[in-house]
Amino acid sequence: MKVAVIFGGSSEERDVSIASGLEVISAMRARGHDVISVDTARGLLSADAERKLKGFKVLENHPDSTDLEEVRSQLPVAVVNTPELKDVDIVFIALHGGTGEDGTFQAFLEVSGIPFTGSGRVASTIAMDKDISKRLMLAASVPTPAWQMCNPADESIEVQLGYPLIVKPNAQGSTIGLSLVRQSSELRAAVEKAGKFGHEIMLEAFVSGREFTVGILDGHPLAVGEIVAPNEIFDYTSKYQRGGATEIFPAAISLAETQKIQDLAVRVHKALKLSGYSRIDFRMDESGQFWCLEANSVPGLTPTSLLPQSAKAAGIEFSELCERICLLGIKQHNC
Ligand SMILES: Nc1ncnc2c1ncn2[C@@H]1O[C@H](COP(=O)(O)OP(=O)(O)O)[C@@H](O)[C@H]1O
Ligand SMILES: [Mg+2]
Figure 1 (cartoon, protein in one colour):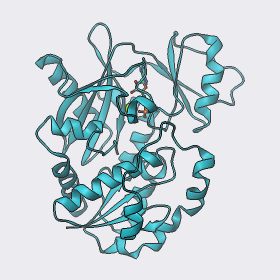
Figure 2 (tube, rainbow, N blue to C red; figure 1 turned 90 degrees about the horizontal axis):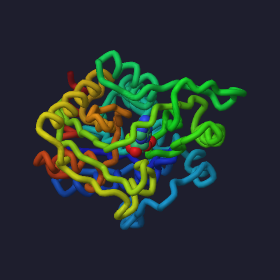
Figure 3 (cartoon, protein in one colour; figure 1 turned 135 degrees about the vertical axis):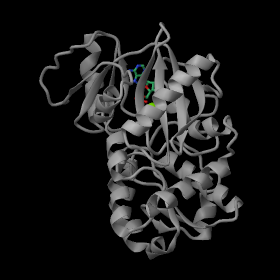
Figure 4 (cartoon, rainbow, N blue to C red; figure 1 turned 90 degrees about the vertical axis):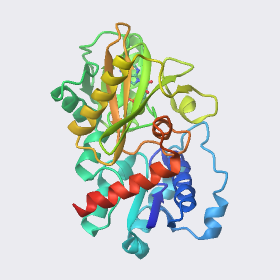
């Protein structure tokens, strides 16, 4: 098939997206498909430009707004100036965060009549909004930690939850802008840090305990994984630096626990109307209860990312996973 892998974007997760995009490009080529590559900020990449990205590594710190200024000014280039997108069988969206994951880009492709991978515009918008996602989880009887919303402009924040709590932006990924707050004196700084990534801030009950994730492909659960991070939080560094966290697939939990968390993950995938594939994150408390933290509609897509590991432990190699994601996108477009 003819595939355009689109990656880069202008969110703080740009580096992660470049890493995902490059892996998807080589996996799809390895399976014999005709692949073009498009950076949303630069447009169609020549073979030479692609070669220059070889060996690209996600740095220890995510790019900040100064680093992203140039790509942000260039953003519409790819979508407007790449007529080649019209001629492909499928656009593989390897964009994380921002307009690439929140439904904006999906809406553009929908109105353009171009088939694309993963969830449509509505589900993408919902999954990017943690507050709305959690309301739908509760409606689907999936436990999610208690939470309240606040605005960094509020003069005083009345905390209805006990400490410790987690403060995070409502619509970010990769643990960017997130803090663990142990006492009220730390709250203001945490809210301001999160406030750099949007005005809607979530305060959420901290669930101490083990962390799990479940990949979903075509509505079915893949293997459950456990993440053992060096600190209490699975942060940006432990997510993307070698040796940052130990990731165990399949997780060492009982069959009953495996079935329970897989069932919860599928319920979240359906409640949020996600399609194609997704990855759902959980914590397990000391009593063994699972709490859903969030759903990822475009999870990381390098072979060592969590969804590909979840697929591999279920017998699906990375290149097959990429191909199946494409075929699901084409099927979705045609029905
Ligand atoms: N309520 C919570 N209790 C415990 N840990 C949390 C909680 N919320 C987030 N975390 C930690 O922060 C990480 C990132 O949070 P998450 O809600 O998944 O946002 P994102 O991955 O989109 O940045 C989680 O993987 C987990 O380690
Ligand atoms: Mg997460």
